Image (cartoon, rainbow over all chains, first blue to last red):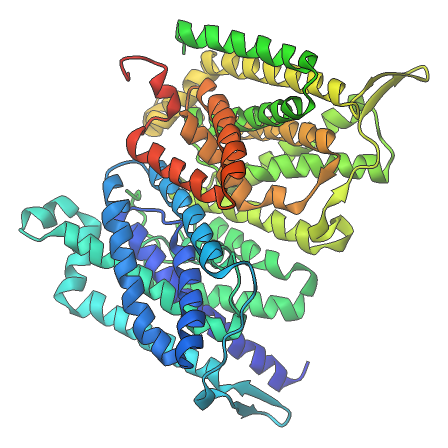
Length: 292
Length: 314
């Protein structure tokens, strides 16, 4: 393998990892703060991709799809949280798991009813349909680079919101002691709604950005969901920083695994997770205290 | 745990009805009942983990699948047809896998445990679906079903639907009685106590890790029994049996029925199959119906359908 080919795989791994981060960051925050193990998170990714396909086809623009789709999915997340998830706060993880499993079945059928079982392609935006030269023979698609930049921008935004704003402060406080936050006169219920909706919108955004790269197909959310769980476990539940580094680790090991160990490519991610857990049972950045 | 009298009567009646069903001559419903009974074994094996030991495993399908695949491998590759050889081997293999997976995943607790079992199960799924030597995504058909031959005469041929049905019935009754015995025994009481307060049990001097691992291995072996019977009944194994959807479905069965009761999950297996059957006839989007039913039960019957049978809701 030439050096430039290796660099190309490395870049692809980083790009895959950054997309995973968008999904995993919502998953880890929703678990860390709301205490909900959200299986429907992958469905939001899938719905995002289908929205990119649907709106993109009507308007011919992926940017328009993102501009319309993200607020739409934010609203959808709000609705799901208000109608279903919010009824289960304080109940055990099992009921929540069961509920979100039911939601997955519903969303899958919704997708089948609206879009059918075919695989759909989504065009790369024309502005970005060129390759960045890499070495003498290879080139890296500009759209992948664009995706990386978008994800990094979102990651920086999440970090800023969590660490530097009043809302982020409340979210962090709510994760530690929701009763106390409530007692201080803060509307925790609204806080949780916003957080859940934001997580939903992030997952959908990841789906939209990934749509031109992976095509759009039924069940696409489930693979991403499971891998995102792996990311969350590696990084430590509730830790956004952990999700970031976990996602990069998973993205790189998956992509490099495909090149170096083609027969075992899909299993390698899980082997990495097992290794991390043997070393640190609560993930790289997990809190040593018992999770709620 | 003592079963309420109405439940005991219901179970007895159900067992008798299931025993008599093949004599009706209705092949469709007999096959349907066989599928439900396998689902019952699968669900109660997980109930030991979830409902008693408090171990929420989302990788339970691994043991079902491994046992089923081993049966296929033994029959196709080595020509082993005697259930006296294949059954202990398959169950032992499932138990061994449970020992390994359990040892690894029990290092994690709570929701980490859920996710680790999920990921390990998924790893097996990819291993089997991507490896052509293990049948790939198409799965494997079993050339010869298990049959017992003594001195050249076939005594039991599990390729025959009636014999397979009888074997499944016996397996279900024995598994149920075994688990009922276990959860009433000191071992089961310790498991329940660990679920409620593991720290206290450790302080009292119980090696809680060993108890949990034993439960995990036992549950895995029984899931292996379900897998063995499934492969015997259908003569076909496929990697989807490893998938997280399968694990999720068994877990849903347990919770829907009511965890920690044994009869609840068995009832859940029956109800889910019946619901699936009729929803399938009514609409192409039957799994949406199942999804809605699952959501309704979570919201309105938090302790599962079994809580309806207990009276007083207690």
